Structures are given as structure tokens and as C-alpha cells.
Image (cartoon, rainbow, N blue to C red; front, side, top):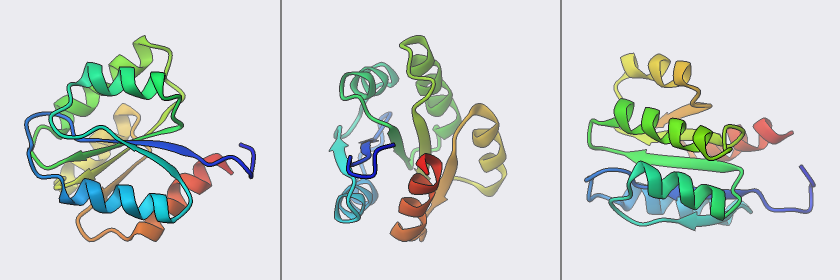
Length: 132
């Protein structure tokens, strides 16, 4: 990836979860770290997230999930991205994710999972390393 170009990241809140503080923290943190960030807002469907990612030509989709439906929602979003030609888009997941579900998410194709307390530096470093 061109060193001059900003990496475009879409931060999304899938499902019925109405808590967006963590998503805002990540969106602002990545923006401050030099990324170009698009925030979709609350209660996005997997279709809306995948379509938005393709339309916005993002390199990364960050999913913020607190609802407990992380496995189902993530799998659906990954399938929708693939169906629309976005299988090369890096997907990361954050929120309240039980430790035992992290390997399941990674097996689906998620690049990494960031639980509560993860540092912005860790998230930014993971994204930069992916595109290095």
C-alpha cells in the first residue's frame, strides 16, 4: 500500500446493540493515528455493512459488537463481503467477546479480535502490519 495514502477503515455497529461509546473511541483513535475512518452508526445490517465497505472502497472493516451475537453477525458480514468481491478486506472485531470465541472468529477469517481494554496502539499496529 502506498505510504502516502491513508488506510481507509469502516467502523460498524452491527445488530441491535445500542451502545456506541467503544466504536466512537476506536473511530476517533484510528483517525488520530492517521487512518481515514468512516463510521456507519448504530444498528447496521450485515448487508448495509458489506455494501458500505465496498462503496467506500475501504481496506479494513472494524466491527464493534457487544450484543453477544458476534459469531452470527461476523459470519454473515464475511459472507456478504465475499459475495460482493470484498474478500480481501481486512476484518477486525472488538467489544465484549468471550475468550473461547476468539479462535472461532479467527477461523472464519477475522484478522484479529480486540476485547475491552485493548490499546489503540495495538489496533493501529495490527492494521499497519497487515498492509506492510
